[in-house]
Image (cartoon, rainbow, N blue to C red; front, side):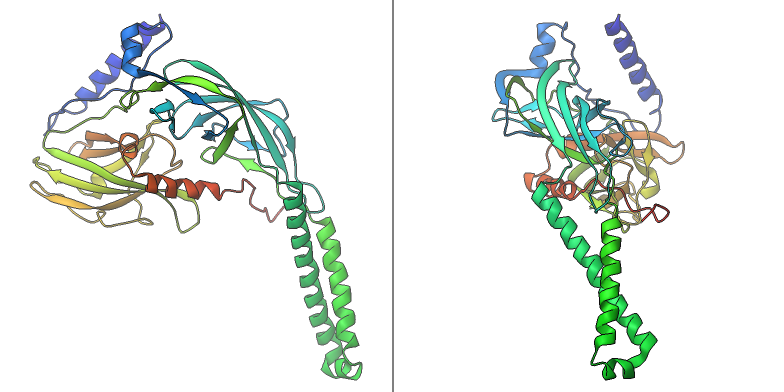
Length: 388
């Protein structure tokens, strides 16, 4: 029954994509995402796997993004949630856990922010994975936002000293303003010292009363889950999970490089791509005819906050152009397709998978992109209306 429904969905999607592309260019060979269930034939399995076996073991770390908000002050111990693996996990022979694999997790422990500057934290457990081909894989994985006790104590002490020092400076300045420079000289500085001592005491009191930050993990934040067990897994072929693409005859589009960047407001929401385009169609394209579409069918147009090399260029018939273009998106880790539109009817004429292109990006660039996510501290921004 499920196979029939899935087959009808594929046929319907195929017909809709063909109907939407009646225009100036003809679509060429399309690539469909691999899919298989446990009951599928051996032929389907052979199309997915190489026949080799590799181990997912203790040295491996899975990068994931959660599907819902996990808040240390509201989430409860035992709450279930799902996360999605954002990067392929490879062994010596190839991919063993593909991006898009869904992980099932539970909140094992939680703590909200407390006085004395103690931050909230979450401990998460993961017990199984569900791969895109329908397999369920038992694992033992853990992730925690809790700092080591020594690190946490050092952080609190440093902050409290900051409060005390600021209080001392402010107290000294107030004493100097109230009693005057002459009084400070006559008392050989004791008035300023007394004011500093009072200010320091007030600062220390504020530090003791100060509340830490609440932890918050939101969709789009990348977490790193450490594997605590060893699991033998089959190795996927490189072509097993290539995403669907729509090609336009005469329009050659190559994504040469992909980087993740922060916008001027320090939000990690920008994807910058280096493109090579050869336009042998009868159509003219500009940045208004380009967009990124994700797997939720959300549309994102070029951003003025990123690289604008290609943003103000016209790509006319016969042109060959190369340059960069940036898009601001809601979650850089979703699946995206670079889409070209026919400006006369606003229908897509070509869709190029960003995920497929990312597989060919150099490891150096992938490592650079990964470093951006490691800087996340998972804490809420201070609310000016919250109690101090």
